Picture 1 (cartoon, rainbow, N blue to C red):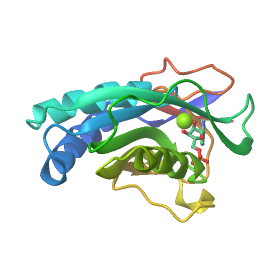
Picture 2: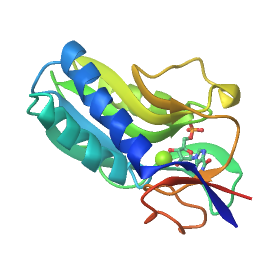
Picture 3: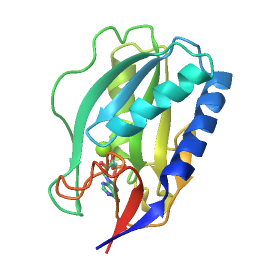
Length: 171
Ligand code: IMP
Ligand code: MG
């Protein structure tokens, strides 16, 4: 059973605002790096919101996996695939679906800094501050949510529900 938590309209309204917020604080031609797979829908909508706000971002993706096939985190972040090219000297905006323990964002930030990024910022759709294990926060946050397991809008449970156009809670 799933039930809607954040509607399509609420997602759209908030993401339109995020584009404006990002345009006020980041260089126009920032390199957006979406984290796969969970961040793919949010990244697609966010870059179009950034365009509306007058920005001209470059877009790339990096694939991380931290959850196995269940609701329980493995606690280990793995890089599966390549690190985007031409990180050196760039201003980067990491885009991800959920900030949970913080391990994924900390890992991605370290990777980009280690490859010579000039500045690394982050935009996360859903923040779960109660779950944090690493002392890290995002620069731009869509919504703060309670300690609930959510799906939809790119986010899965055992590879299901990524296609939902809204955020839902699984019971
Ligand atoms: P962190 O490294 O613990 O911050 O984990 C972040 C990642 O865990 C997210 O990008 C998601 O892929 C996954 N995750 C965390 N919470 C949920 C959830 O409620 N539903 C599905 N995936 C989740
Ligand atoms: Mg993820």
